[in-house]
Length: 162
Image (cartoon, rainbow, N blue to C red; front, side, top):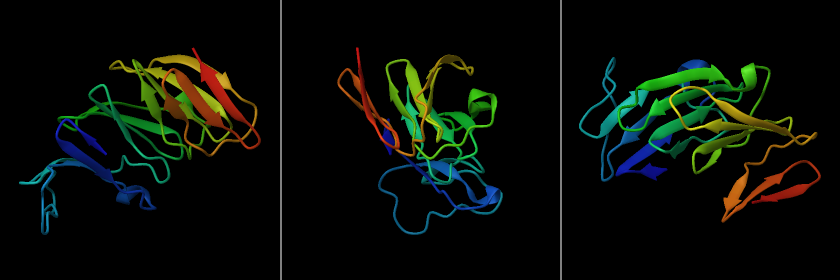
């Protein structure tokens, strides 16, 4: 994904040690591999290890990177510096995630595999604004179009408009 002149890339590699996420300058070519024990170079602006999810993709919104791991661990980073703002288990724990988060306005939406949507504020601390339960499994990422949110569960497609 791209934001503010940077490319954001991660890997969903299996194993906790192999889940880096980084911000890269566009136009890089050749080998831009970081040297051991470094977190930046001419092309890599910053790198954070062990934060990318295995299945869910990250999202950059309101100057922050939101990365949720399949096990529900959410890391929120400053998009410019890569510094961690906070790390927490979404919903307090016990949740698994396959869907990628989506965002609109001052909210970020996380849909668990159990069909529970956690709505978070984009502030600098974990603030759960709402929790909505759909009562059945969902592995699909929500979609936002105009004033509507679309959520697909195992047997239904919901359109939530305002």
